Length: 292
Image (cartoon, rainbow, N blue to C red):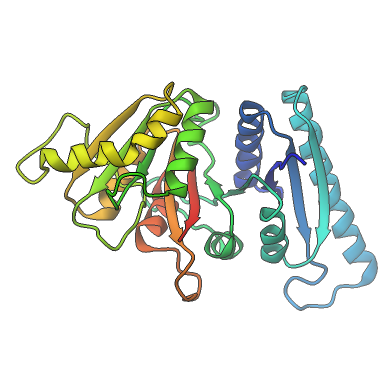
């Protein structure tokens, strides 16, 4: 059974941007699109009169159906379905993520300077999902979507042929987008595995970025380059503060791929400091890929 690209829809501008990004991604990947809406009868514990609750539910369902019809009009060849699912939003989305190739969520914004909040639901899903989740921020202006930039991904361990779900995800995404992968190794971040650390052009080096590390990075990425010979790859080795280098790299990127460890004990809703910074400030779509 073909797994869809699934997007959470709640009628907000961020979710509309997420739905449009998910539709374009589904079309590129040749996958169906699924729109889901979680319906909590009493989301804040306050009892509403039954007629009012039904009215709100019907209004939410109408919005979901309108979103589906709009996307069908824009992407007529794309298989699309939608469903309103009763339950707590985070739990509904986590369940849908297990059945999807990719889960897409919107990020609510406060502007480029202040950054933006993920929202409590998005934070819970990103911290707990067992499959990749993409967070999409609305473009600063209509038509400002970025599909033709680089796919940036970080690599901590330079052992050749080491399995990496992040590289799997980054190269497959670059292949469908016709994009370049920028693989980056940050020497001063040994505890932050594959958090999309890229900043400066590959040609810029200094005495702190030894050539042997660049060669080791190229060797570590070689299995994916062999598997995707059509995908151009550039390499960057750098020393810098993690959050800053990621955010500079994210400018103009088609996608930034960051990681979240899954083998460590759960510590609340923590997703890692670099991933957290990128998700709150990058304007590009950000894919969070769980890894061991």
